Image 1 (cartoon, rainbow, N blue to C red):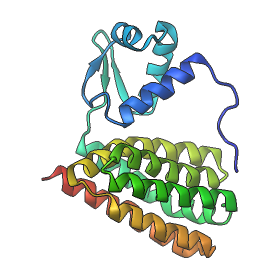
Image 2 (cartoon, rainbow, N blue to C red):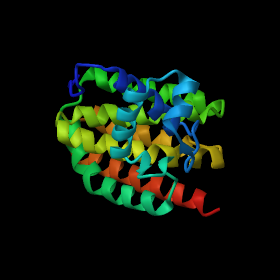
Image 3 (tube, helix red, strand yellow):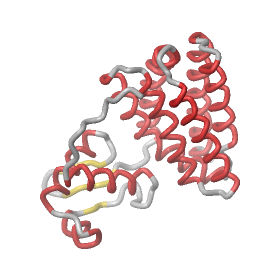
Image 4 (cartoon, rainbow, N blue to C red):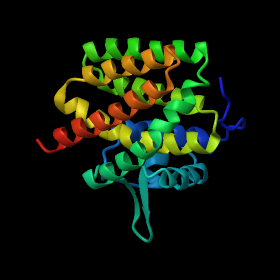
Amino acid sequence: MHPIAPTHFRESDRIENELRQKILTLEIEPGLAISETSLSKRYNWGRTPLREAFQHLAEQSLLQIIPHHGVVITPLSIFDFIEVMQAMVMVIGPSASLACSRLTEDELNQLKNFIDQGEVAASQSDFVTVSSQDYEFHRVLAVATGNQYLCRYLLHLHQVATRFNLASWKRDSNAGLSLHEHKLIIEAFQNHDEAEARKVMTEHIENARKRVMGAFQQ
């Protein structure tokens, strides 16, 4: 593995992770106004660490802190999605090439497991789990670049895109194409083919953009 994450873990980190999960899985709806008081009571979260979590999640574009009004879960704006995918296309190909030269056998096995788990979840129409496995798939590849700055940037983009992917899969009730593309990505990595890894990863992001755009225009 390529350790990049910080070693310390605070209460605010735990709350941030839990709240992020609720946002990414759409358990807390996009556009919903939330408050420290209501979340503290509902989930037994401390006010001070929750306030810190708000700041971090705002930096990740998952919520918006509006002065004198409160906190709002970032809406699913198709314009934001377009910008996210434009940014993704600019970095995903070179990132895939870099990861291809550094991916370990253990990480490759993790990728295969994520696909297997995603296929089982998709067969049960459990798209929340599909979304989770999809994010983990791309997280491992981001970490495999071995570049902490690139990794953080990629994870930021993938987190923003996660809610759009989940909403799209729920509308279409189909994640098969995305999972198939993940298999093509793994094949390129298994063959240590950096050019092919770059190509199939870029195509995967472009296809994801088209699928989400199509779903939101229905």
